[in-house]
Image (tube, one colour):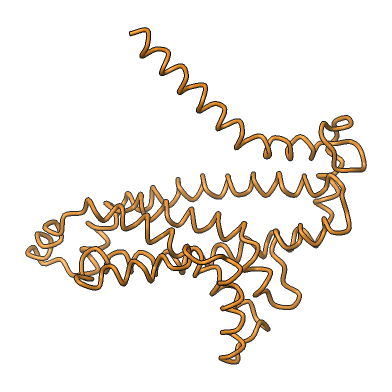
Length: 265
């Protein structure tokens, strides 16, 4: 009994150390955003909301946030639809092609992101699209986020019994009705989880956006990178803090709203 308590205590302390290690950089950035001084330092030289006011008056950063939200939203919808369809095909219809489909869907995770970005850059110029529009960047974001949707939905589908769809079919339900009323409510944790992963990754991705962005278009990570090359003020920490808070809000609201809507099907 004593040994078991010691093991639990050691495991608890170990987990707390890991969490502290992961959260420490975020806490440092949040603390630095309230710095009253003129330089990005920690601990802060006094507390002030000065740099949040500067940020809300900086149209460049505000436009970058809007761009990041728009790109992440579109990428999430596209990768959510394609990833869910691919997962259904993989689990229920792929047969001997299962391994091929799995490798094809997970390939973007196996290659370094910079190589994927360079390959896409050559591809869009070869087919004559170039980077004059945000289309190339959207393709890159979908390609990177697609595996996360596929993995999550596939995991949910592994516990789905095809007999449920057969029973609904025998009662006269069409393919769309079977998917909407039976399959989708059962796999909704995987769909929502995969889409949330896709949104967060798309919102924060840098290399793909940097290589494939169109002229005059900058997502928030790119704008922060450009800003920190010439400035080192707490405004960058304020932007980062609000970015983290915005991501958390979007994730929580999306999970609640989408979860309730799917539950009503």
